[in-house]
Image 1 (tube, rainbow, N blue to C red):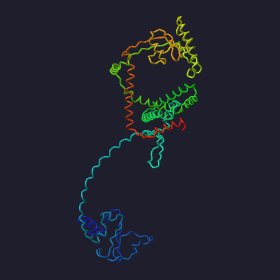
Image 2 (spheres, helix red, strand yellow; image 1 turned 90 degrees about the vertical axis):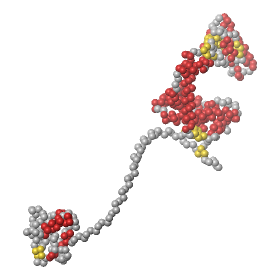
Image 3 (cartoon, one colour; image 1 turned 135 degrees about the vertical axis):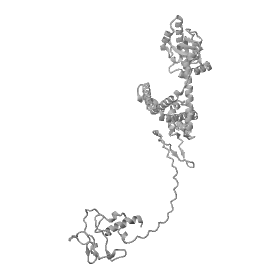
Image 4 (cartoon, rainbow, N blue to C red; image 1 turned 180 degrees about the vertical axis):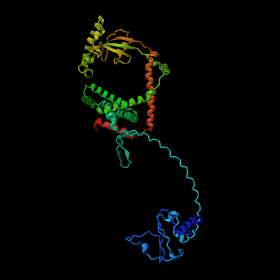
Length: 488
């Protein structure tokens, strides 16, 4: 046992056993009552006890026989158990009474423990990079149904040839035909099937290209147009529909019937019109601000395009007309030779009567209102200002352009009838000044720049687009249009 630790233990033991003292001493406070130990004949000094109650049963320790002496115990077999409110163990720490009776064996030296290897420093952990904010997810555009997949025996599975894919949009043969049916209906009825196919193929091919461009631009416009711009398109659509209904007498049903006769529906017409409005608004909003025009550009264009700014001679004609159609029932196209000759005689009589009145000095406009059979008779036979090459009757136009202002021609005979023409007003050819030409030049340059920007934009969209088209797509569209026309 450690010497320093044993000294207080021995001292305390001496106090307990009464060594060196004149009477019983206890290591507790002075106010604790002390009962002197009693001796018995059999065992010698008795345990220090408190008076026992007669009604309490003896404990197992009291009923056990006396223990025999054993080495290391005091002479006489005295038990050193001490009764009191504070155990001795509490005063001496972890020392127990048995330590006074039996020497403790010398503890074996603990095995030499090799020092644990010094742990290597943990690798420096770089802080995790701050996650970037998730990109804003736009609402997915409404996806059209995917194309039907057909399995051809002996071949790989292919996308149906009746579909054309442009990114997430699909164009069907019906989409193409509903836009070109009015043009196909306008083709001559008597042409052969082969001729119809030859004329239909380029029309369909052009429409396919147009729909692909529309699909590309509409995809971009749907993501970038503001709510205000979309509201503008809605308002324009309502205005257009009102104008269309008013154009057929104010009846929507009559409008639908008129459109149905052209091979399409009102819904298809309105849908195509909405697409055009959306594309126009988006492209103009995107590219017009990028168009720049300055005075140097205007002057450069004016100098290099002088021929465009030479004002040609213009004449305002006034006519007294006696066309043969006005004297033949059903028109000259269905008339016999006899009917045409008779009509020619009557037309000549009318124009001769008008010529005699002119020679008498009557007003040209008054005579035109009285005798002319032309479409402008009610307005005195006056036509708008025009340059050469814009009037249907070439002989009448040629006569008008050689007259001085206010002159009247002689009677003019043509295959379609007889005419008298007056050069009501003549504007000679001249050069347009730069100041007069600036507004027109601005329109031309603005349109050129705008078209260049759009062309570059389309090329960019095509490069980044996914376009899947069967080689048979246009062929199948032509076949279907032919079946609709010829019922095969």
